[in-house]
Amino acid sequence: MRFSFAVLIAALGSSSAACGGLVVLDLDDGAGGEGDAPTIPVGGAPSTSVPSSNSATTSTGPGNDCQDLALAWETAIDHARACSPLDPVIQCDASVVLLDQCGCASIVVNENHVSEIQEAQAAYDAWVAAGCGPYLCESCSEALGGWCQAREDGGKGRCESQFY
Image (tube, rainbow, N blue to C red; front, side, top):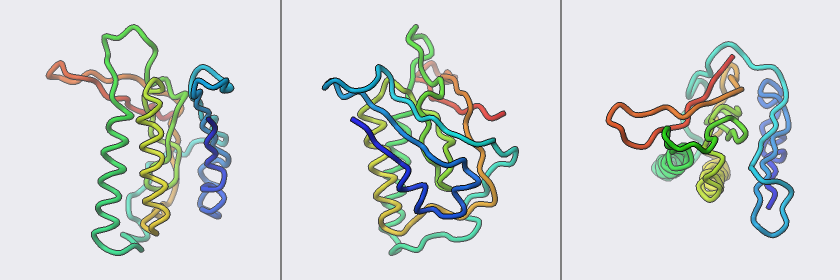
């Protein structure tokens, strides 16, 4: 199964140039796909500054709809970021990075959670299609690495992004 975010990146216009260009997610759906692990190659140099949230707009969509869509997207991202620090399987290595609220490739997710990644991308697409985002941000910070961060209470971990 192949998802291309090139259309989304192209739709972002000049703000996407700061984020590095083409982003492609390859997911093996078991039907003779192209690879064993999902990957998103991201080009371009990272910015050293962190994007400012809502720097230009809060929402162009209809009120609560945008809030509901954003909440659904955030929930889906949380599920895609879940990991287990004690699991010997490689997780959160930045082979899969999803777009954030600014359209920047900065969210490292667990590459082993294919269906959760698909749900997060669908939720992001719905948020964008409703006119709710992406926000205009001054710059993009792209994730170039990641790790599975353990929780203090011993529960499941969460993929965290590494920026250089």
